[in-house]
Length: 84
Image (cartoon, rainbow, N blue to C red; front, side):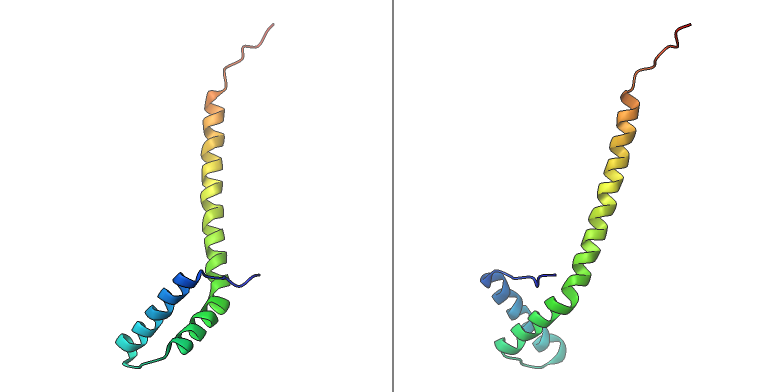
């Protein structure tokens, strides 16, 4: 699977958030390179799991909608009288 490639602006924003997390939650200061490397690692290692979960959720929604559509199509059928 391809590694998620983020737009530059989004990657910079997330790198800043990683730095803020370390500062606020761990009282540690990390540089932008370390934060970006951590972000890249997380995307590589956790990204596929999140992606697969999203696909599972999407599949569930599509199947539910298809079932609903099938029910609606059956309700549109006209009764047919048997000829003798």
